[in-house]
Length: 494
Image 1 (cartoon, rainbow, N blue to C red):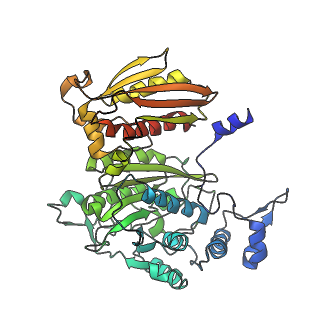
Image 2: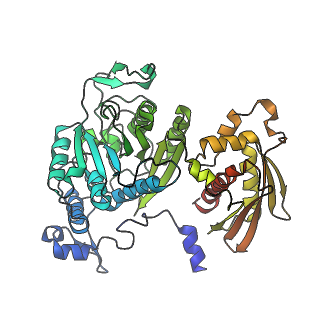
Image 3: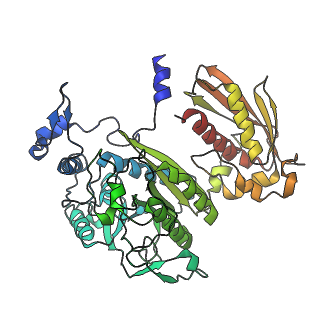
């Protein structure tokens, strides 16, 4: 019983490769090693060391000593600049590492080629390049545009000569002009004038996802210094870009979260339209730059913005979207990543021979769900994509026939990965008229079975009916797609 309760209440947690996953910061130890930090540590009634998270000086000193003690990085920022928390930022770095190591997109680099990233709005703290270089040996370009941010980012790089050659700080020039994808003709950029009085770009702040959405018009366009276009040089290529965007439309909105004091200037915290407008501009820039980056990515402060941004990505023709949730203490953020790189054929072709039968476990299934519920979800999943299904609830099986169009689309474009139930609209785009749900004359036939193992644990198994079918290469990614959807539906709802 206790183990079930833990599984039901489990939330996404700190990344398993994060240095602080098994060993959270030890304030008692750090205060004994760093007298400057000791001044900010106090003890609760039960003897636990704490700091005042609403004290900017305390959070800044904690970041300084963690970078020094755990990463060998010398670091400082002036008063008022945005102060990052090291464990949170490490989560994002490790997620990028996961994306790069996955086989979802083809990696054309050799083992000798270093990973190269681009940090949009690196800030005075320059935290992502410093962590990426010190933890993984990655090289970075960090962009910003304010004099203070550029000066202190450069200082933080130069104060760490062991990694300084890996990091370039680049100015995003403010020209009074803004790039607009709508004015892009034949991939030639056309400039539009920035609106008078527009706020300058901010880049990061901690946001409470439970705060009311006070932004009245998040769909307004972004105006400000360049994001990627105009900063990325001709002929440059990167493995990824990352961004902690401006979450807010105004300083009043930014001040609604009293739980922490991470500092942050107007330039770092605010832009018209907030994070939604800023990330939309990133998406528009990525449409022009396309495969100059293997992965584009950004943090998101409000989950409510995730759906609209994902819709925008599919609208502009990306091949893959990935999302995740970052949880550190009481703070939740979401990550979104996308790519224009064609999905790796190796992901489809390399396992065909041995993966005619596949299975996965659904562990920690919530009590209100049974094998019948999972079976119904399996049927809905395939029907929603235009496949035909015949279910047998007494045997707990669904026989599926996926059309040639269905399989061809999977083989050509890969699987769309998102945080939501996937509606297979890429399949509908290739269907014609009202007959798209009629049984196809040919296609890929397979059976999905659901077995109750023990309470809260189900086994889902897939097996091909005709193993020599030329479309059988589509079966592994289809089954993986189903696994992702079922796990999100039955294991991650809270």
